[in-house]
Amino acid sequence: MNKVIEKLKQIGVIPLAVFKDEKQAVPVANALSKARIDTLEVTLRTEKGVKAIEEIKKNCPEFLAGAGTVKTVQQAKEVKEAGADYIVTPAYDETIANWCKENDMPLLPGVTTPYEIQKAVSNGFTTLKFFPAENYGGAKTLKALAGPFPEVSFMPTGGINTENMGNYLANSNVSMVGGGWICSQALLEKADYEGITNKAKEALQKFLGYEVVHVGINTADTAEGESVAESIGNVFKMPVYKGELSNFVGTGFEVNNFKGLGKYGHVAIDTNRIESAEYYLKKDNIEMNEESRVMVDGKTKVVYLKDEFAGYAIHLRQR
Image (cartoon, rainbow, N blue to C red; front, side, top):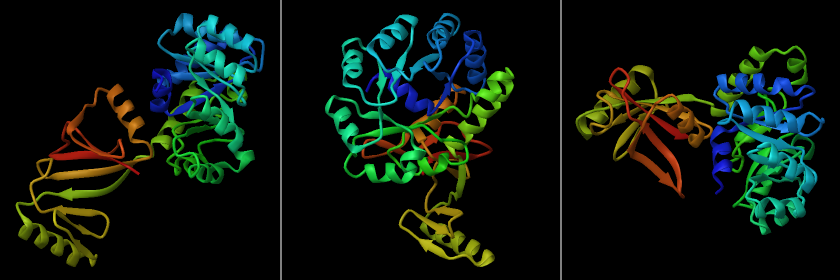
C-alpha cells in the first residue's frame, strides 16, 4: 500500500476545502493540526486551489495537502508541481489513473457504480472515493458493495457529517470519511479558524467512537473467578456466563480466572477503527504492549496500552 494512502487511513477524517483566497490555506491547515488532523483535500473548484496547495506545502511541509476535483491530466501535473501529496478525482478516469501510476502520485479515484469500481480495481486501485455518497444510497450501498469487492476500502464523501458518520463506519469497508462540513464556506467566510478546529475535534471524536464496554477483574484461579462472578451477579441480579478463561456478569464485568494484565484488572474500550486509534495515541506518546496484540485475518482485533492506570490495564478492541 502506498505510504500516503496508508497515512490517510490512519488519520481517518479527510476534510475538504474550497478556497476563494489562497491566503486562508495555511491558517486552515494550522487549525486542523490543532485537532491532530494533518491533512486537507484542497479542491480545484476555484482558481485558487493550486496556489492554496503551494501555500500549505511551503509553510507546513509535513502537512499532507491533497488536490481534489482533479479532472484532467494537465491539472494533475499542475498540482504535482505545486507539491500536492495526493490526488482525488470526482470519477474514475483511466487517463488520470495511468498518469498517477507513471508519476508515483497517490490517487483516490472517485467511483459510484460497480462498473467504475471494477475498472479501478483492474488498474490496481483498491482504496476508492465513493461520491456522492448520500445521493447514491449511502451506507447501505457500501454494505452491498462489500460482497463483490472484499478487497476494496472506501472513503465516502458527499453529504457526510458528524451526525451520519456512524452509519458509514458500521461498514468494515469504510476506511476513512471525507467532506466539506469541517471547513465549511460559512466558517471560511468568517475566517473562524477556531470553529474549524472545534469541528475537526468533534468529527475525530465521532470517527474514533471510544466506548467503555466492560471492566475486567483479576483473580487467582478458576474457583475464585467463578465465586467473584457469582457474587457480583447475585448483588446486581445479572446473569453469569462462565467460560474457561473468564466469566462475564451481564456485559459490563469480566472476571478472569487468572492474574491478567493490570494489577487489579483491565478496562476494555471499543473503537470504530483501531488502526486510527493507535495512530492518534502514538501521536500523544502512548505506547502499545505489542505482546498483547491479537490479530484476526491480518488485522488488529485487540491491543493493550503499555501503561497501567491506577492498577488497571486498558485494551482497545475493534468494534
